[in-house]
Image (tube, rainbow, N blue to C red; front, side, top):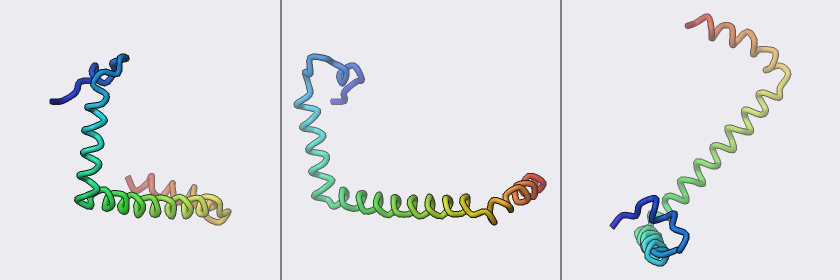
Amino acid sequence: MGHTRADLQRTDRSGLPEIRSKINAHRDAMRSAGEFDRKRSRQQVDWTWTMVRDVLLARLHGDPAVRALVPEVERQSAAAN
């Protein structure tokens, strides 16, 4: 049985044990199938690449020589359209 938004917004907390039980069962199934660890590993790889991208962009934007090139690169890019 699915739960509606109204079910989840109840202030009397009725149904909360059942929802918590379903969440825990899902988590346990994901862990026993190895899916939880696969997803966590994928998240770690994605996070690492995000950090690398952020550091590289920060270094590029912080480099005076690169900043000096930006207007010309943007002009050429706009002219290509």
